[in-house]
Length: 615
Image (cartoon, rainbow, N blue to C red; front, side, top):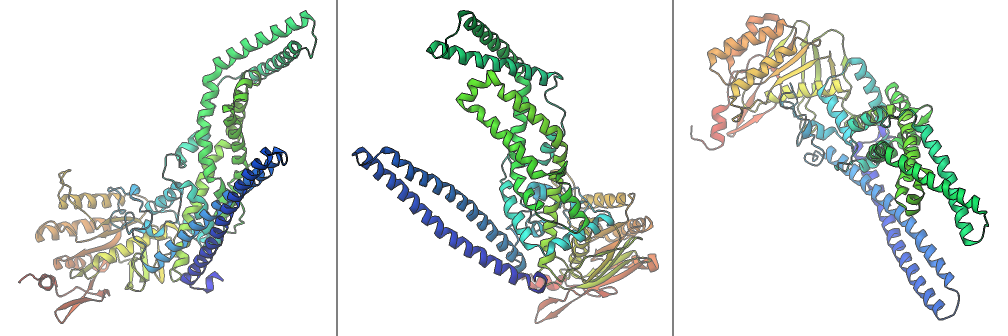
């Protein structure tokens, strides 16, 4: 059904359903408030009647019990209501993406932006209106980290194909993607308590925190002694009350057992306090963070996946046949028992039953059995969230296609390719082919004609392709490519770096990429713009020749038509293309269509005149 309908129609229908459910539950929420108020009023009336001798005060238990039951029901209703509100926000964000009004409304991923990365800044991977903001539906930092890592590091074709199969399967599972987003939002608090994958995995894999090899035997012996002391204490108390007559010798023995036990167990607790408290301190934060993810894991465990990657991730959530959610539930029960240490009775009983040391041992047993799997659970949750982001993008853009990967590179052949950050109704599509003999395309054209956008279009789609996502093209064939871009290069006053120097540093970085195992796709905008025409011509030819001879392929753009002559030097390994503009009624118009050959006119003077400069 999902594949037959328009994404906007589906999202709008589901949004209306969720809003209707919210309206129904808000009405129930108000009713429950009135019922609870009525229960309080009933309790007051019962107390008044009981005080006036009409019946027993015990009848007040009925309205009190009703109030308690209503409170539990009300709490559950509020939890469901909050999740329906989250679902509304989920579909509202989806509709905003479809309408092109999503920029600035999502997670920008600024924390992943590294200016030294070979393409992240140039291709607008992160920041307001970025590719990450468009793609990410992840609600945990773990999922966001995974998606960012996929965008920053191209994967091998086999891994990409496995992600494509997973994305294709998840594309139609709107209910699963909605549920995961709603449930994962519990863990997206932005607070220090939010799950830290690195710290959690390190906790699960760390060596035992209680290193005494005989500690288990010691705790059992102390517990036996404490139990005897507890029996002796009870006997003494009964003897003192007259309920249990004891011979003086037996009473003295009971006192001796009690005193010895208190001394031995007190010393034991003092001697080993640092050990078991280290276990307790370590598990408290870890258990809380795992609890935030437990409902996400429960939802994942309900699914049965067909694609190998998703099936493998779902299988990785099990430890010795038990699902991760059951393991975490066991840890949560241990934490509930540990929390009971604050009760006065448990504090008194501690010296007799060694409550905390026993629980610390059970926590260490849990960590020994399940701790090594924590990293796998977190990785699986993060990968599935990242796959949900790619699947949502694929669902919302049914015209996008999965790329095809070829063995021999460099290769990039695109039909009707466009930039995914542009609205589909406004994007102009072009065809381009790189690879085989052709290794360089020189793009000339006037200002604002589309040269830089073409570079970003190819770069962003190459990044999407190698992350496992669909691409904004009718068809895209490519080999594995290491992308190197010099599009958005700026000077640095504080670093004492001019724009020209920053550009040649980036060119050096792109050249260094060619030493790697993957062929390089270079995308260089306004080649050596910061120097004179003579030096630009010589330098550009040398750099391009070096890139091509090292097996790279790519595009360069320029305003300097002299650089178009590089094609004559490289022969069949290079080609010229250009973008044009036309002037109508003193207005400049662009069609953004790429044409073969070199541009023969410039629009700089007309642009200056269009803003009121007298030329």
